[in-house]
Every structure is written in C-alpha cells, then in structure tokens.
Image 1 (cartoon, rainbow, N blue to C red):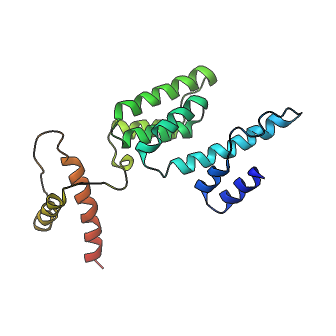
Image 2 (image 1 turned 45 degrees about the vertical axis):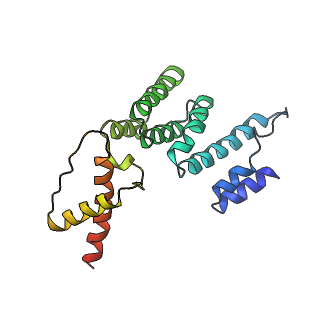
Length: 190
C-alpha cells in the first residue's frame, strides 16, 4: 500500500506528500528470490523523489540531510550536485568545493570514472561565483532604504558603484537591486 500511495502522489506531482509515505528501506526484513531488484528499483524511485523535493527547499535546511544521503549513496551525482548547490547558496563555497572533491574521490576509487559534465560544470560555476547558483530570492533585512537609493541611482545613471568595507552586503544589495531593476525595465518597455 505504501508503494502504491507513494507512486500515486509522485504522479500527481505531490513530491513532499509522496516522501511522507516512505517508511524506511523498502521491503526490509523480507528475503525472496528476485527481491533485490525490486528493492533497488524502489530505492531508485525514492532517491529521484528526494532529489526533486530537496532541490526546492531552503539550502540551509537541507545541508544535513544531503550530507547524510551522499554518505549513504556516494555514487549518486545528483545528490552531490544538490549538496554542493545547497552549501554554496548557504555561503559555504569552500565546503561546496570539498563536497565535489569527495564525490570525485568516490567515483574514481569505486568506479574508475571522473564526475560527469553536470557536476564538473557546477564546480566551475561555484569557482566563478556564478550568479546562476545564487539563491533565486535574495533576502535583505533592514536594507529597504539602501535598496531604494540604489534603484533611484539606477534610474538616473546606468552604472552605479557600491562602496564600503568588506562583508557589509554590497554584493547582495547589488544583486537585489539588479533583480528589481530587470523587472522594472520590462514593465516600462511594454
């Protein structure tokens, strides 16, 4: 019944609800011919749902879960990619790159292969501080006045320079202002 409900919820696009139906290792405690293949198939379905579900959540919330999953399934590049992305988005670039090295070590040692192109591209994006790996929503707390000032400056001049000591959030402010400016520019061109 659990498998049936799990699959139905996945078909309906209810990933979180499908994962809630999962009660641990499938068919645990049973031993029958051909059962290993069924268990492997169910585990693969579950891992696919986990990857889809965790990829949508707040990076800081999922780092621990992803670290545990990569430990249990070290050859699954999708989990490593999610862990690297979550670590990077949580402001932990060094840890994200260390995760790539661990993934590579497992793949080379256990399978004799290098990481696939997607994982290597993700490493390159993290090294380059690629904005595609930044969180889609930039939260600025208490910076509304600063954001308005940057937006006003952008309306007057196409180039604005933010200055100040390191670590005060100039980059986050610039990214938030740029995101708002893009939306504003589209509205005015219609």
